[in-house]
Image (cartoon, rainbow, N blue to C red; front, side, top):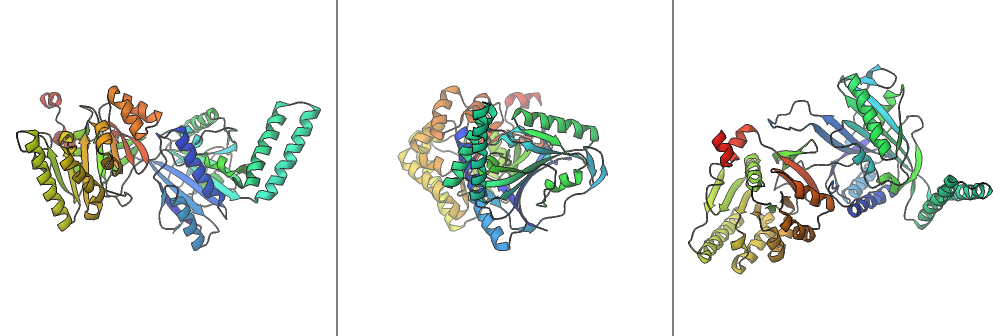
Length: 517
């Protein structure tokens, strides 16, 4: 059996701009250009049948991504792993891929597999001529139970360039004898690709793409397959249903490295292959994280101390009533083995949260309060350096004090160096623009940034300062209470924040709901 790598996308941004998606596409294309053997990229989705989370909208989909490397040596797999990690695809240790799931009942276009699921496979036979980056991932939507297998076999550039030259010459001759728009367009496309191959900016590859749609019932599988084929048609791709080839379909979308479906292979440039965007949509699912909600039907778990983070600092910002404190308390409840401290103006917001120590600002004047806060964070910082352990310190709505010169530099040092002593410093504030203006180092050293609903008067400056894409701006402008946009290591993830009833009773402070209860 071939070796495989499980991939964790960390930079494929569903809220990215067109230019950012194009850069991601080009980065993947460069990796594909360096392939030495036939390789398979796989996206697998499974329905979550029985969620352990008592939420209004629990997770419905679990996704995993893989790279399958048949014919690779152990050393070549390690090189592939390094290349994928370089473009934001964190890779597991190599493992031997399992056998493909087999079918037990076969019909003309559907089959029932060993686990009782009904499956139907679609084969891509014509690609969009001009496809937006990520066209395949976007066409499938957020909650589709669809497995995708992209098979890539590198080809020799010079040989294919000669073929393209002959094709362009033939189409030009045909167009002179009888002018035809298709011949003219084909000749120009062939010449453009040929020039890229000669210049070494692209490389040809034989490519085959299969999609296996899954459902619990046969009729549901048929309807889902029609819906997927329709959406792919809207992206100007052409697909066919595999008939009496369900065994080959399950192989093509399993971790086998095998593609035997009829008429599936096409020769394309690596940039076109990379445009598929099968690593979308993604989520944040830190191994030891606190469950805080869902994104596109997938579970979101957040851990300030996750090993993938370059530092442990965090930032939460949003307008009044957007749910900043609710989200922070949910995070605190879900983190195990973490010593948590909160400094706030009063002890009414975070009091009563198990395992959380609340510190109330002391002093009558702002100068006295700033002095108290400086003494507190100085002592806390000394304690963290003497006895490193997982500690979370949240400074809630204290921006007027933090920005004072005697505190700002010290807070920036804690944000920058806290990782060395297992300290996560998080700041919650409504004054995001002021923080970006007066304490940019705090923002820059926060690998986790959480944005909730923003007022229009604040969003413009914030969007410019943080370089938010247009989709991200639109999300924040229309976000409801408890809807957040989370930035983690370069990726923006929209989140529907959720708590179970027992957590909700502890962390909800809305007086209207408390009175109703």
